[in-house]
Image (cartoon, rainbow, N blue to C red; front, side):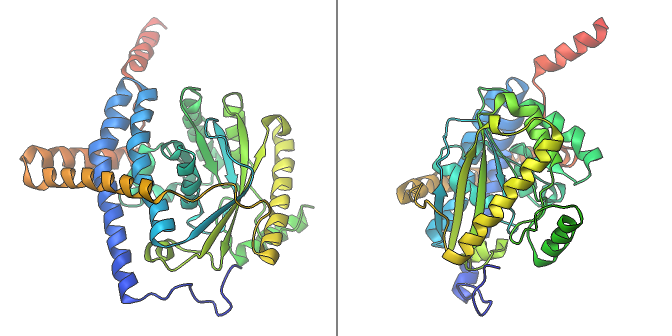
Length: 375
């Protein structure tokens, strides 16, 4: 495991760090709430009644700005070094990202890569449905069209295929990210995975788990014709795998390393059985890559991406805080109708997230009604 020799965090949780962390979380929650209520609802619901394409453009702009607060926190406030290696990602391509799952916050560090490529508002995740229940953040996941799964294919299959079918418009940029292991890595899970591998004649992996295939295959099956490539991202941490609170309070990690490998779609089989074998082999390669990372302290071919611009981070932060300030003032100090609006939007977002509701354009509804009457 990537830990210090004494098992302690990089930085001690001092009173100053505690206060700073609480302040950061407060800002992130408040900005998320106001962006959701005033801009998320307008972009992802009102505009979506007329156009899914333009709905995604508006939502991407505002939520890309909010999501950029996290790389700002990681790299500029916490002083975490994010080091990229391997191949570079073409920012103009529609891609499927697969990554190993070291800890509960791996997916947040993919935002550091997406922001560098100008695709932060277009990254979607396949994530466990329990995360949709997080206060405020769950609403964000719904607005951003994350795909919730319960790890029961009879339940997840229809939901995945239905949502994936809406991602085929070539006008819409797409970064669809999933973690085929299905859960974060722990020593206990690794032992169970190794036992399963030994019983089924699969490679014995030490730094990753045997991947699950159905979700990955569903993405390929539904989107192969509209994707440009698959990118395999391998994530390693120095010197300890961070938790969410480690990130918030700036305790760990000192470095995040991401190795990127482009895989042409033509190199991936089409049958589910062959895709299963292929994906296990990819994670075998990933396991070897992580073995080298542990022994050498880095991945090969470092330096494929530069550092984030401090000026760009500060301008984005200022814009988000300014919009949040205006929305907060309007909610609490102007007309009571602002409070009524906020209450109604909160009620809608709660129900939409619980029932996984994504509005359809009005002309789709009329067409469905017309077809129903015709039949």
